[in-house]
Image (cartoon, rainbow, N blue to C red):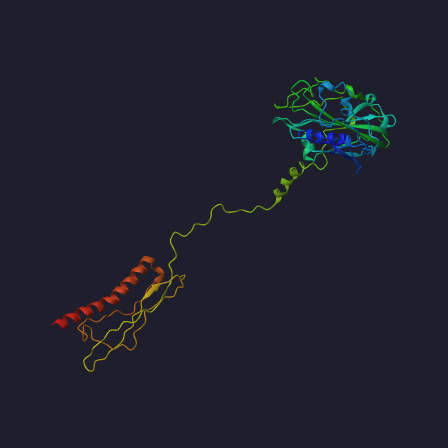
Length: 404
């Protein structure tokens, strides 16, 4: 039967505790050089963790320090913290980017940065003797709509990172950078504010001469400071960032590097000079009447009428052509009826041999363009009626003569 090593068991339990946890700094970029941080979710369970510039932390639950611990050493660089073995070099006036794991959106609050001179080797410094001076702070951005827009929200928008500048006036030497987010979502209650301090060793170069006195880490805050005990679920006109005053040359409300919130502010200006194209709001009116289709002459089967004359009788064939509507568009061509081929004249009123009156319908010129669809339909109907009526009369006369 296999037995789990205590370190593995502790790691598994820690993973369960991180489900509802917060965040920590995984690494920093000092003047373009990346330095790994202290991975609190894995290094505590390793026998030989690597040497890093970050201070260690016992907050394996990714928890916080509240107001009840402001006078405890835990508030300095987090719970049970120890100095890092290495230091990151940065020039005065240079920048440091701190890269966090995912920070909860609900944990609104300020982002504050301090320096403390180690006056020697920071890897063996006594943290309780460090005196911190504030070099950067950012708090409430817009409090009109609770819970407001805060520096922590800028950190989230900037891909979970925060960038600060080392003041040019700071004298060269070995320093501890104290970087901190204070979550205020429960700060309306006593000891409700949540502090998340993170520390890193720096070697600052340059020609600055400023060496501020600073304040002990255990004296930075009290649990009744206006910026510590505050309800953020109401409109806020202002916010007092806790801690000592910012030193001369420090950075108040630093903007995150390449903050995505700045891009849209200039984008809408580009189209203002673009040419304006007018688009009609109403489509042209559609025709209220359908176009009159054209009509082409299509011959129907010719009718045969027998014409009888005195001496000798001559039989002629007369072709009568009518028009029928088609789907073609108007062409402007006027159709005409087909003339009969070599007709033989017959005196008016002369009855043919069968006793039927002669059909005297001749060619007719039609103005199709001026006729409506209804008129054209009536024309075709009348033509057909006049075509077949004589034939019915002829058959009726034939029956009458036969009976006689």
